[in-house]
Image 1: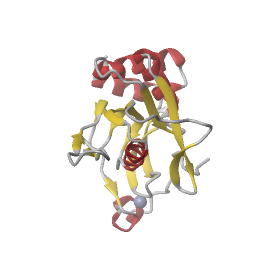
Image 2: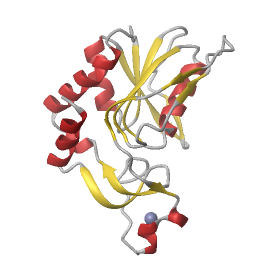
Image 3: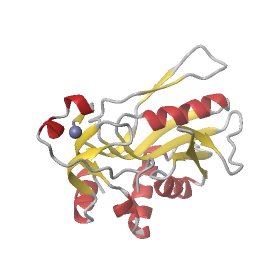
Length: 202
Ligand SMILES: [Zn+2]
């Protein structure tokens, strides 16, 4: 399955929404990837997980970590494919934290899996959790990178001065404009604003 096929899949399942959306980051945009509508089909979720896992086949990942809620299903599928543990971080007072007894052990090889990367803020928070636990970040993967490949992550291992740049591996890489609310052309056109995401949104 190639990127174009994955994109068609999103369109086919009504998961690529067009309009005026408020992202979890607070930014506005004209297109929204509602991956839950694609991942509601377990056989599709398994195929996408398998496809995404291909990037990390030789990574010897021991743990896959995802941000709740959006990243949980695809994280689980990738972990299953790689024979790794699957855990997730969830928001507590606005910050992503490990709960439910989830742990990352020092030196463990950790892969970050997200459904859709826009600003990359959730992934940065997960990388911080990996660093705090003195584990190793071995990669970042997502279904959709909507920054058009502009985003890079930095891993700062605590016991070393050398930081490492990590580029996300994605199945779909598209550039969708995002706007601060004050500069949003859709707001100026008075297009009704929709909040479809996951962070505190029903
Ligand atoms: Zn707007």
